[in-house]
Image (tube, rainbow, N blue to C red; front, side):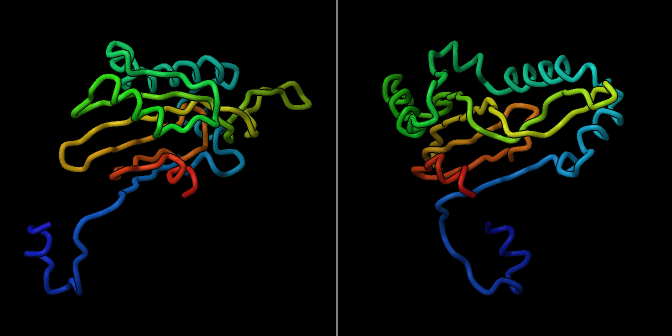
Length: 180
């Protein structure tokens, strides 16, 4: 912040100290227009018949990169059977049980309503990929940072059109992430 103010101080009207939360969002924009998934598959030379296999492979990569295995080793991974479970409360219970002082507190997973994709056949029998309401696996990562405090981030599985979000907050609530 000091370096920024030194460089751009003349352009800054005022400064607020501290933050309550910081949100980073990202979307795969090209998937939002009607033939977006078809274009994605064509550009990546993936046959529509291979949709299920491709999606399963990408989902596995996401899971492998999401610290799920590490959290399982530490006994800090939980699959929640209900969308009514308070995620923040469940994460804090796990962190307290394991006396987490810093770093990964836990990874939570549950299946939630979302907009997703499905491989179907059109009236000519040609495989197409169609967007529809469905249920998607969602991962929630909780951390305890020495400076920022309690942090959480969420990541949808593939092929969801849901946003990816990472929220850093003191006392963050996942409900806040999903409402923005």
